[in-house]
Image (cartoon, rainbow, N blue to C red):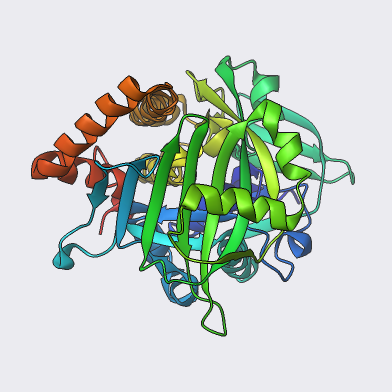
Length: 404
């Protein structure tokens, strides 16, 4: 007998597995296929990769029952400091005490562990990993995927959650607008002498932003942060080849003693930076979520949060439609999902792209103008509140599961 499910989710990363769990909490069944080995993705050790989880995204995790599992591993972001090369005129985004934090920082491993453990316990999720997809079919009455192992999986709707190089999106012929920034993000975990006081620092240099993101203190009370340092592509190989001592000297130069003495607590890794936006995120019985639909600069830490808003919107649309007796792959439902998500993703993508270009303009005059504008934002409460709501992910037409 064919095990036909509501969703066939191709990609079981942070967005894909959150989608499967969120759908399951609303009674929708799914097949989840991922080529990566879950054991490798959750192996011991911190590799420097971490994610900022906005208030809205935290609401989603709370509403699907993950908050208790995740809470001990997260570091609250109590404020965000934005500065142009540590010169005067910085902005401090600090909410009022009754408003809570601006979000939380988590090591990606902890997010995966929570999601994977919950998925194993959920009977509505059939998890196939590590497995390769050998073929995909979408038709009038359903979708299917043939695995390299010979298995064939069937569902009503196919969802691509495979990341920026989504083969499902390419096979569907959905056009993508994209360009490369010719920059690379250096990722590392830092241990430092002084506490970070739960402040996320975004320090803009002409070569690219230098972000210090607060992480939970280590088991011995050591203070830790995640580093995301943007460098020109032409310089990346040289920086990766530096000794640990030389690398830390370059980091310390840009931190200007902010956290005192620093050391590495992870390896240094890197990835190229680019912009990507898919104008159409649906096709016949197909929906795109996360980086398969949109890839943005990490300048504001909103990439994963955008994907989680996709999850909330798609599940809400499907549940509303199924209450009316519609099939999960119904074209009307997919049109509603696409319209709902397009404006939000395009707006955020353009904003992050604009910030990247604005702070990349070199020269004292450009710096002076930027700092003048930042000082203005610092003095106008309404503007600061607007930007803080954006950082929290609490603006716009939010899906119900992402509200408090």
